[in-house]
Image (cartoon, rainbow, N blue to C red; front, side, top):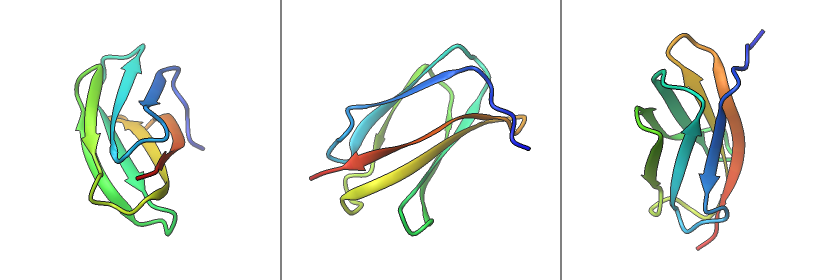
Length: 86
């Protein structure tokens, strides 16, 4: 069972050109973001320390990507998808 915490994650702009911002509200705990392409391959992973973090995937192919934000304690904060449209 995956426990979901109440924290809002926004990815904007969406769609984007591969450069976008992830913002968090409602939590100070460190979290880790993982981004996957539609083949299930992880294309990005990093720690989110701040309220907003800019990510550059402009070298990756256009298409639909999935993200998961997980807390240090292993709880799922948020998951969703965004589109890179160059």
